[in-house]
Length: 150
Image (cartoon, rainbow, N blue to C red):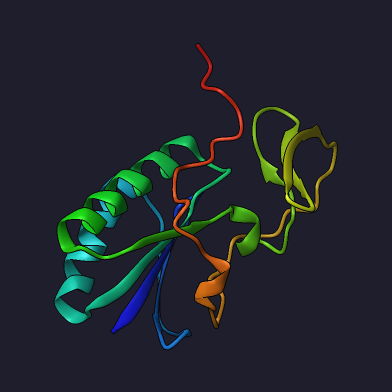
């Protein structure tokens, strides 16, 4: 059995396949999550059986978060595969994440805040070479960080 990890908070979309915690396949594709996820998972489900589906629940791209959550939650329910999640800072060495304008999400301890930053040091999201399922939990609802603009 394998675990699938999805990071769809910006471009490129990242999907990692893990066997006993070790990354065995990495998929990196430019494009919209809504187009890419069904295509990628159609192929992956023919190749692997999954113990867990894992995703970065935010903050990041609202649309990326929504699409990924709905896609993986549906897959989780229909295939009876647990869906786990953690925040996006786990995948970018805790660096600021773009929100709007000059505002960025930052994480101090366990608190995520919005702060204005003139010249942030941004580190791209990366798939870890190794994962420990203890770092992910069943609290998998998306984290948007700010309300939608009305």
